[in-house]
Length: 86
Image 1: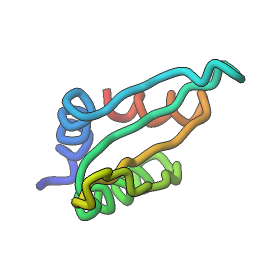
Image 2 (image 1 turned 180 degrees about the vertical axis):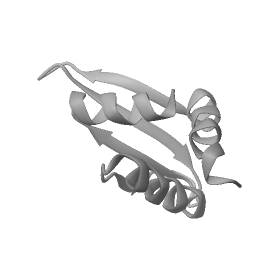
Image 3 (image 1 turned 60 degrees about the horizontal axis):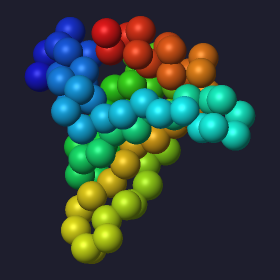
Image 4 (image 1 turned 120 degrees about the horizontal axis):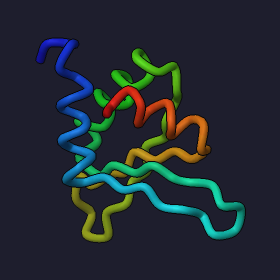
């Protein structure tokens, strides 16, 4: 995939398998995207290369399959990521 299309591809994935939600305790937003570990490893690096923001990947499967979540929090960080994606 051409690097100039990375944000469009990630936006499509986020629109289908992503979410933004608020932490009610401190009113801080969280960014989440669910996919396979292999896919999220690549997306994590692409986001870092384009925004400078580091993101964690967590294993979330309840059936022991290859389901992971790319997740980060912080309003400024999420704004930077979403500005690049959209």
